[in-house]
Image (cartoon, rainbow, N blue to C red; front, side):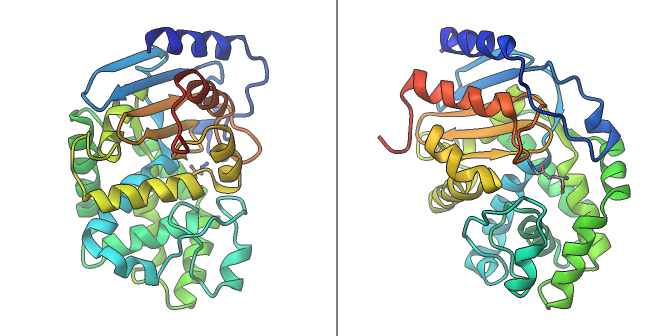
Length: 300
Ligand code: DON
């Protein structure tokens, strides 16, 4: 495994086309695009890392996996009356489909869907309680208490949050929002601002490995979350990721990818330059190389 990671890292270092770092907030725009890190944690806990795997980055939309796990645990199938389970085929922050489909987002990983998930776990709780619960979950999953929210990123997200607020307001108008849009969006911005290293994220992902990994959620929810990661985890790049990599993955605009090899391993990859769909350019290439070199795929 170490040899595989070394080869992937060497390949990544040699690439000149690294995509563009997210520019909508200064904290992400100023991240050095030359960085690349990757960690693999096996079901038995053995781990391997390469490159900048110990550097913290903004997990952004990767957080949607953890909030979905909390929401499914708390609400079960009730959640699906408010959000769908189909790929959207549109950018992560698209407004277009939401009006057409009467305020029910296509899936829990596009922004509108993730806002509904956060809105659902907020019900009857204060944002600080929900964020506390989320951090406890992520820290327990990672076996590491040194995981925090970057306050400056959360503040910046709030200052540049008009588009997410508009999604939330539209869903409120359609009767698919329970809390004030500012409150849910504020909570969502803080969840996106969690920072982790590849080492921490790969550890935190172990609960999604399945029967052979640690059990924090039910086995049926492990399967469901992996199915959604495979079909929706990379937005309008999800089909391409499934074709090229063949493993469930969830990306974030900070350049992170959490990828699960069912029954075998949890993998975190980070490189901040993004492709046209807002997914890590080198991260996606590394995921493809990893699948090729290990022969691991959910498709046999
Ligand atoms: O809500 C947003 O737009 C960002 N905080 C997170 C979006 C994101 O990570 C999309 N991923 N590629």
